[in-house]
Length: 269
Image 1 (cartoon, one colour):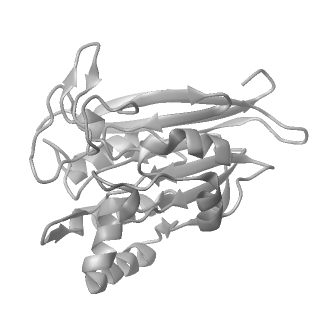
Image 2 (image 1 turned 180 degrees about the horizontal axis):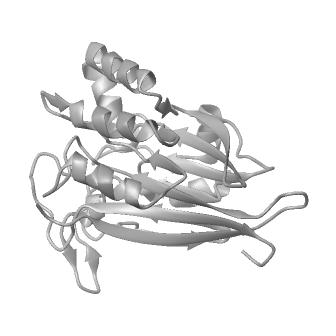
Image 3 (image 1 turned 180 degrees about the vertical axis):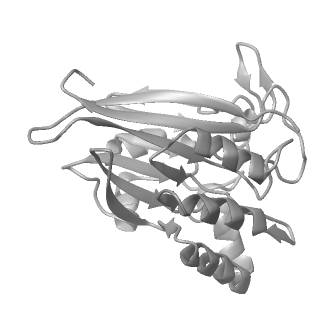
C-alpha cells in the first residue's frame, strides 16, 4: 500500500465584534472516485481519525461515474463511518451530477444511504454550523455539465451563483464547497471567504517547479491545480484528490488528505 500525503493549511480571520476566538480543524475530501489510490478506505479512515478533526467536508466526486461504469460502495463506507463521530458535509462534483442524470435510481440509493448514515448533503444549499467556537456557513455549489465540458463550456457569473445558492453569509465565515476550481475569481466576487475544490487530480502528472500537467479543459498546466490560492480576502484550497478513474495513474502525485485549520483571533487575518 502507498502512503497518503497529508497537506496542512491555515486560514486566519479576525474575530468580529461579539465573536469568540477558536480554531476549527477540518478534513477535506475530494475526488475519491470510490477508490483510494494505492491504499484503501480503512487506512484513510484511520488517518482521518488520527488528525482529531472537528468536521469533514467533501468537495465532490466521492463516487465514480464514467461511461457505463458507476461505483459508490466505498464512498458510502467512508462518509458514513466518519459521520458516526463528527459532522460530515458533502457537495456534489461532476461525477455525482452525471450519475443522477444517467442512473437516477442508483443515485437515489446513494443519497438515501448517506442520509441514513448521518451525512449532510449540500446540493446548492447551506448549513450554519459552529465548530469549536468558529461560526461558519458551509455552502455546496453544484454546477451542471455545461460548466465542465472540455469544449464549448459555459462560464459562471455571480448572478448565476446567487440564483443557485443565494447570497454569501455576512455574519460568519463563508465556506464554499465548489468542485471546479477554475471559477475562483467568481467565487471570490460572490463572497466566499474559503473555497474548497478539487476536480483536477493535482494535474495527474506533477513536475518539479511546474506543477500539474493535465487539465480536463483544453490545454496543459491548469492555473489552479493544487494548493492554496489567494485573491483579496478570499482563499481557495485545491486538493489533489484521493483516487483515480479511467486511467489508474498519478505521477509524483500521491493520494492527498487535506487538513485546514480555520482560526478566529483578535489579530489581523
